[in-house]
Length: 299
Image 1 (cartoon, rainbow, N blue to C red):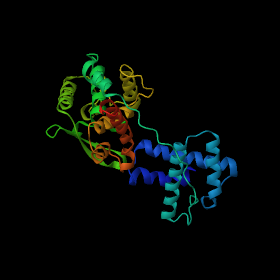
Image 2: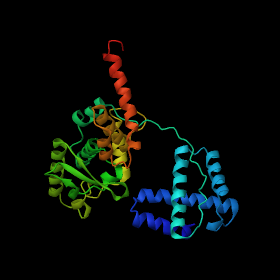
Image 3: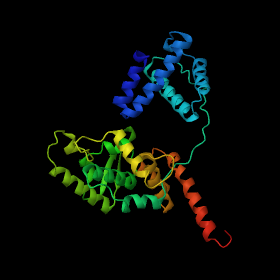
Image 4: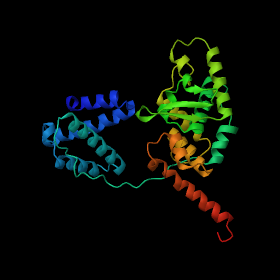
């Protein structure tokens, strides 16, 4: 499998400039598919991969109770892979013709109530330590900007525009977007940067370049940021899912609830189409129903 798929993986990595997380997902999906072919049908040259082989794999995934959402992603990975093979001339026909993605019910985004976010960002005291300052700023940036987890842990000092009160974020597909930030958040970032300059004993170059660092001067790793968010959200909300992505959902939902238009939220989130952003309108409609029921004389 590796020799067959590696040129495609290199294409995603170096030409499409996909994130390491996305490239890994493609590699895993292709690895699972070709492992299934080997175990079920023996060594199978690429031109011999048929639509029935693909359907057989998808049926095995359903038997394993893999969700429709995950199966759809794997289908998308295979379609991209075989489309690349057609373009490079390795194949004349794709086995993905006729493969239909299963329908998956779209779950509404989970978000934190505004009152709970206000409690966390304005009233709860974080420890007066470097870890406490870092985790407080991490929470505030997530909620104030709606950026993704990988976007935050890789955020550089140079991406903060102090005069313009914005941050420049490089998102999926290496696309840049500009996000305005509040004056209070900008002040906190500036204080954090100054405090970081005064600390000594850090021998890591990222301490000078990366915005958020741990108490050793190293850039934050993904799991650290995830666990920090989960810890602090546990103090203010009982929702089951507590993650940086929930803060992203909260950012978008609260904007929509306060009248932000869909296109603006789409740009702030870095979505490529309105379809993903429209999920947040369902939460907004629920909010409007609640207001209508409480306020309308015939409610």
